[in-house]
Image 1 (cartoon, rainbow, N blue to C red):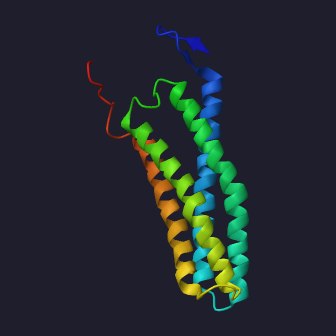
Image 2: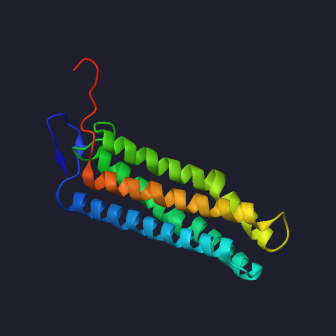
Image 3: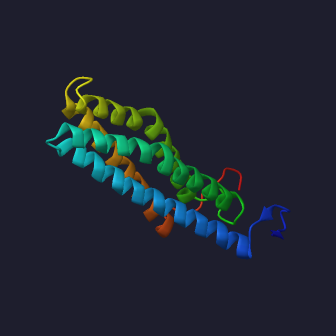
Length: 170
């Protein structure tokens, strides 16, 4: 670590590269898992056999609560470390704010809505609750929406658009 003129600790060299690599791996895993979730949700919505649909929703529940949860937390933590411990800063550039916001929106919406939609779709496929179609398509919409937001965050990370945030009094 190097101490800058502002006496703030900054990551440099090997620790920065390792943290960045961990961030890229975690966020790539999250995108890949979101592709899988979208594919499984679509398969469940279109499945003629309710048992196939129910098995898919059960798999989505496992992926969502274990693998995606781990990838999301790792992405958020490594992203926050990179933003506060490098020259980019957490609120110095619009693109870092946008990526952080997208990450939080995906995490909160997964916990608050999409997981419930998957549970209702599984119950409906087993004949335990209502008709299958509405909940199945909500599960597809949730998974696809998350995938779109994560791809947007990736594009923002690569392009780094919008420039620096101007602060009053500067």
